[in-house]
Every structure is written in structure tokens, then in C-alpha cells.
Image (tube, rainbow, N blue to C red; front, side, top):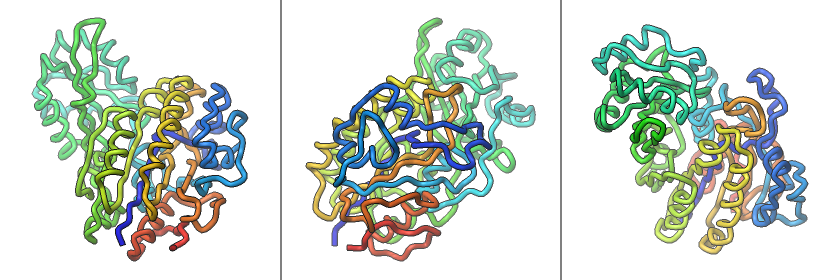
Amino acid sequence: MKRRVFLVVVDGLGCGSQEDSHRYGDDGCNTMGHVVNRVGIRLPNWRRWGMGNIIPLDPVPPVADPAAAFGKMREASAGKDSTTGHWELAGITLDTPFPTYPNGFPESVLTAFRGITGRAGELANAAWSGTAVIDTFGDEHLRTGFPIVYTSADSVFQVAAHTDLVPVETLHAWCEAARRSVLVGEHAVGRVIARPFTGVSGAYTRLNDHRKDFSLLPPEPHLPGYLKALGIPTLSIGKVIDLFGGVGFTHYRKTRNNAEGIAQWLNALSGFEHGFVFINLIDTDQLFGHRNDPDGYAGSLEEFDRALPAIEAKLNEGDIVILTGDHGNDPTTPGSDHTREFVPLWVWPAKAATATELGIRTSFRDVAASVCAAFGVPVPFRGTSFLSGD
């Protein structure tokens, strides 16, 4: 039987602090609750899916007969970054978090990176906002030729360079070499990211189309690679393929924003006849969560809500949609870090699930187990399917 399963991640969509959130400095965070209640958005289509049944939301009350099964999931892995979250959705648990560098990278890492670039130094070497760092150091970068090296609360080694000084291909080569020979062992960050930019002083612009992520390869087995090996087509939409080091997918579509992600999903609904589609919608996290912009975050949720009827109209009998998040990113709290939260879970149609109310799942791994069950293949992951098996 031909079947399509769509796993959709609204990046940074949490729904309340996990029990261990105090260890991450995130006690009291609630991305979905704080955004929806503060801004007052109604989200009528998401309400039909049971958004207000998961947690109390004043503008989005619960419904008696939601179109989707609903619940929430606890992250079992250590950490709260995109790689950790997406890997756990794919059946992988990390007992040790990826290393982070809130005070900058050690001299041993920088010295090794200078050996790759041939430059005598670098700028920044601290946790920065990606736009603020080029505004602050862009002029000095052009004057000295030193690359801008920075990180965030995530486990990332990011390198920004102006295209007039460092061609995009060169920047990509630097980051690929750093991934291969520098950011390894104890310094094996989740991602090395090339961040080219252009423009003039006071008006620098990141070239997101030419951003390139060099991720660690995920341990085996992982959901997309496992399905691909079984001959089941796998499609990545958005940044998912980057988080899996470029492996596990038979097809991929890169996107720059949620509008493109939704458009590519609609295209897949018309042209992808059978298989697994793993989608990431980035704007909630990248544009609004990290920038402490609850209004922008709310607008992004409304954009998705408006798209739901068109998506539902293209879904076939037998299709399954699993909609969730990968971590929290509460824009109403101080700081620009991800937040350690439960993530919401919806399964469409509701009849595809074991129950309409799915409760609190003990791990994101239940998603991997459920996708395997949907395709009728053995489950190699430590998870429990929430699908009915019909």
C-alpha cells in the first residue's frame, strides 16, 4: 500500500517547562502559552486540531471533537538544540549534550582554525546574535581580513565573512575543513555553520541562501536512513537534511523561510506519491524566538494556521501528519537561548492514533516508532507507537 507520512517540526515550539528545566535556567518557560496568551491570537484551524486541548490558552479554547489526536512529548536527551531534538524524533537519544562555548572557543581550536584559513587571527569569539555580530565586527573584518568566529547558546561554531573578501566557496571550504579536523573529539559541536554576508558599513546583510551547515553524522540507526535503506522514499524540506549531515534522504528541498517550507509541503502533497517527508519550519525559532519577538512569533503561527485548510484539502486517505516541535524558544523570557520544554504533538487524522488524547509521551522517540509502524516495518528504536495500526 502506498502511504505518505509527514513529520512537521515547527522549530522552537515548546508548550511548558519540563521537570528538569531548572537545570537549564528555563523554569517557567512556555513558548506556546506565553505567545498565544500575550498576543491574543485565535488560530481557528489549529484550534480544530486541538491546540487548546494540550495546555490552557485563553484565545484558543479546547474543542470536544478535535480533527487531530493531541498530546505533548518530553525530551529524554540531554540538551535543547535543534540537532538533539530532530535526532531524538528520529530515534536517537543523546546522554551527553553537545559541547557549548558561552565564553568563546579555546585557543587550541582557534589556532587550528587559523591553520585552515591562513589568517593570523579572528574576531568576536563569543556568543552573539548573527546580525549583531556582523554589524559590530563587519568593518574590522574588512580592514583586517580576519574571519568573524562566534557561537550561540547552541552547540555551533559559526564563521561569518564578507563575500568581497572571502568568496562563498572559500568560506564553505574553511568550514568543511574545520568540521573534519578541528571540531572533533571533545570539541565536536553539533554544527559548523558558514555565514556569508554582503553590503556596506551600517548595512550588512547575511546571505541566507548561501549559508551552509556541516553537521555531525548521526549514529545509526536513525529514522530517515533506516527507511531509505528499506527502499522507502524520504524527502527533507527545510534544514532537516543539514541536521543529519546530508545523509538519509532520497530527495531534499532547501527553504529560506516558512512560506517556502509550506509551499514545498504543498508541492510534495501533489507530487510525492509514497514515502516519508520530514519538514522543518524555521521562522518561529530563527527570526522570532531568538530575537525575543512574541508578536513576530505569533504572526508566524498565524501564517501556518492560514495554510492548514489548503494542506488538509490535499491530504489523501491513508496520509498521516505528525506535527510537533524540537525544543522551546520562549520569546517572552530574558535571553535568546532555546528553552527546555515539552513539545506539543498532533496526529492527523485523529482516527490514525491509538486515542484522541495521547497524554505525555516519555520521549520524542515515539515519533520514530510511530512512523515505522505506519509503514509496517520493524521498529529498531526505543519508542512506543501512538498510531492505531489501521
